[in-house]
Structures are given as C-alpha cells and as structure tokens.
Image (tube, rainbow, N blue to C red):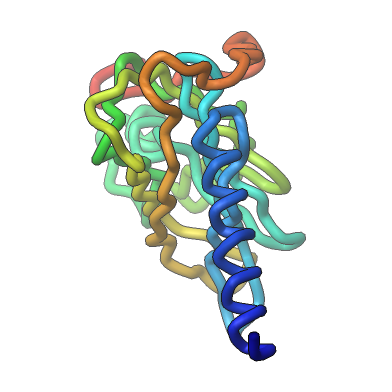
Amino acid sequence: MSTLSKRTALGALTLLILSTAAARGGEWTAPVEVQYDFKPCVAYQARLAGEFLVVRAALQPGWHTFAMDNKQRAEEKLHGRPPLSIDAPTEIKLSQGLDLAGPWYQSPPKDFSHPELQWFSWGFEGQAQFVAKIRRSGAGPAQIAITGQACTATICKKVDVAISLPLPRPGTDAGPSSIDLKALVRARQPDQR
C-alpha cells in the first residue's frame, strides 16, 4: 500500500471514529473558525446535552461578539431615539434534524455600551454559551447556521458559519443533561422585556 493510500485510509478511519463519537451525543463537534487576516478571531462548537443543544463560542483575546438579543436591549435603552448603530446580534438557526422546542438562553452578556454616544451594545469576551431545548425532526445530521459579528476595538468581521452535528440514533442516549439554566439568561424576543 502506498504512503498516500495509507494516509487516506488513516484519515477516513479518523473521520469515522470522530463521527461515531459525536453521533453518540454529548461530544463537541470540531471547531468552526471565523478568521481575520488568516488568524482566528472566534471558533464555534456544538453538542447535544440530553434534550438541549449547546453552542459554544471561544473568542481570541481582544475579540468580542454580541448577544442574541442585542437589538432588543439597545431599543429598550434608546426609548425610540435613533441609534448611532446596533451591532449584529448572534443568530442561530437549526435545520435538517433539529427544531427548537423552547427559547434560547445565553451566557450573561457584558455591557459594552457608551450612553454618551447613544450607542448601546452587549456581548461576550473569552467564551459564551447558547443553549436551547430541542426536538428531533429528522435523521440529521443537524445543520446549525450561526451569523453575527465579531469585533475588536477597531475592526469587525462578519460571522457566517455552519456546523454539521451528527445526531444519535433514535432511542440512544444524547448524552447527559448537565445544563444549569440558572447560570444563563434567557435571550429576549422582540417585544419581550
């Protein structure tokens, strides 16, 4: 067997092992990175935890991203006044195998606002988690689309990534549900304060 054939076979075996582990549930997917100038600024991963989907964002030092309800929070503070700008919120959409069965929860966001500039924004540095109760709607793998924006003090990068999450076979365990919703805050919906 040639060296190239051995590498190809080893790569296929590794992918099969990783896919099988993720299909059992509870395992994190491989990170999906957003890069700026060929350097990572944020990476996203997903996993199932019982009846919950968990999406994790890991931000590089100096980078931040924004809360799912950033627009609603800003509109509340503006009281009808026009904003200087509103940073793009984190949006997560599910398809092919998973549907939402409850509201989204997120890590408590940090207040980045500058009221003197009439600019209001909330988001995350370091790490953030987004959690929602889900129900199966197909065999999968589930597709998780994440959009938003990641910024430093001087630049912003559009976030537009997708995660493919293998689903455990029906009737098998999706992993333990060790989710502590009390450590998270519910993401506000439009017209919800």
